Amino acid sequence: EMYRTFNCGIGMTVILDAGTAEQALSILERAGESAQVIGSVRDGMDGVRID
Image (cartoon, rainbow, N blue to C red):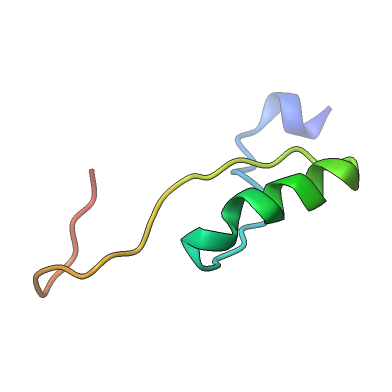
């Protein structure tokens, strides 16, 4: 009930090398978890940018 009423965020996050994302998604799916890629980390200018 709480998850339907309140914004509880996205849950757990995993940060890993982009080259292993598909394998990680497959492992999580086989374990009965729902997962998705939600972003990336890359080189950039100093500072913070939020889109």
